[in-house]
Length: 219
Image (cartoon, rainbow, N blue to C red; front, side, top):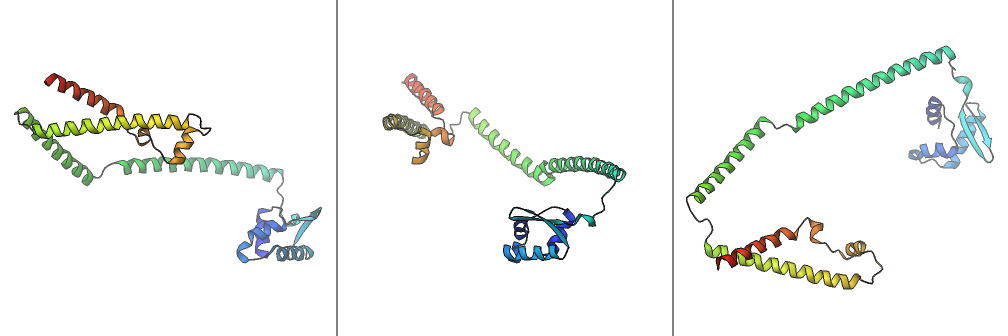
């Protein structure tokens, strides 16, 4: 309790028994015990108090403090202003150093640069080999494999379009007279649209249209 009052004396702040009890929670002191301790300190003259209705506000005895005069206050203000300027300068220097460190951390090390260069060279070589094969007329995909891929793509894309249409019709019927917000209802049911998972049907639809057009021309 005495240590608590020394701390408050250093801060020179008024406090009530609840403030002290909250600060001494780690010592498992109850408010009743804290109140008795404060009253004992007040009775011994170590602290003073004022009553506001049923509540007592305790504070350090002000006669123990050296109150500065006007000249001393002015000097303190000047010292504080100087310290604030020094603090601002130190913050600026710290910020510049942190920015420099971040810049250095974002740069690749020599080993990382060499590793990335080797990987890129390998990719370039692989792409050049594919280009040479294409330029020489080598068929990389067999016609029968290409046909299977195109048919599978066409089937899956058509199923996708059909299911989107069926869902929309069903959803519109369900929500037409529903008082619920559609977005909230959808989240409640755990539903996700293509757009919710960054999937766009349009490019696939355009690819399918282009594929169908090529098929008609080739017939």
